[in-house]
Length: 342
Image 1 (cartoon, rainbow, N blue to C red):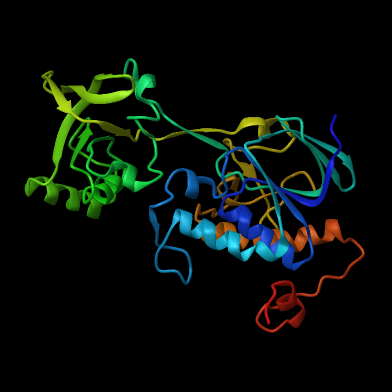
Image 2 (tube, rainbow, N blue to C red):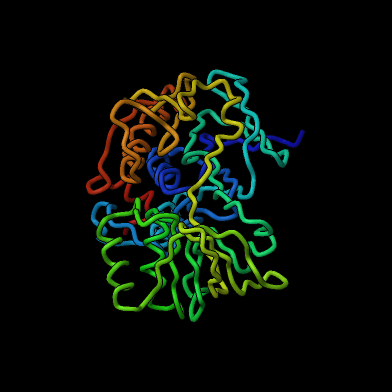
């Protein structure tokens, strides 16, 4: 066993809620380390919709997923958190009061007084459509997320699905793609009505295509897509010319090793109390989409609130003999000094 990395708080998940929690913990002089299964920080914001606009962050009318991630990383710079990416916490063992020993799938060991689970819904994986041989095109011509919009410039793009992701990217990629074809199994969409109206207006103007049916086969060579065979609802079979396909069939959530840590679970979520968002295990907290409680709303701004209250309780575990005096960053010279404010 490798030597343990000692820290006050270990945060599992480097998405927006975990990142902001590091800010709140840092204000209270608690050191943090992060472990995330992804190879980058930002969680779903960076992995699934880095360029998609977000409109409900307080005080920021519009920001992209990557833009929000970048801003949060800038905000926590004064506290120098350490990130361990591309790893997953496999085991959590209570070895003190309070003290947890956590081990990753790479054999790295952490010892912390507080454990914060900010892992979103767990490990998200896109659902693969049941199309024979699709694996040969994945990563080159078939993509399950839009990382960079420029990748799709001047492409014949086939978007498959009828939810918000399919409609959003139909509208967002339309200005730069050579041609967009939206394929859905029926003429009824689960997306926001306004998005559906915009899509139908583009179709009516001849600026994109809408087809009803399902992809049954793909054609191409060496990972380069040239077309898709579509079976229509009337059993007709047609070919759609495309060099790129974006299937949006939803995501499969895998809770992963969390289920083996002795924490109470409820429908693959972690129940918490609402004064500090602590689990049934003292010293282990859950914030963001992975937790559940009466009235829970899965919004980033709610996760920020949860991280702030969690930090107040975490302070008791890390500094049991130290009285916590609440201060505002606007008026506290000591907090401003920590933030490097002149």
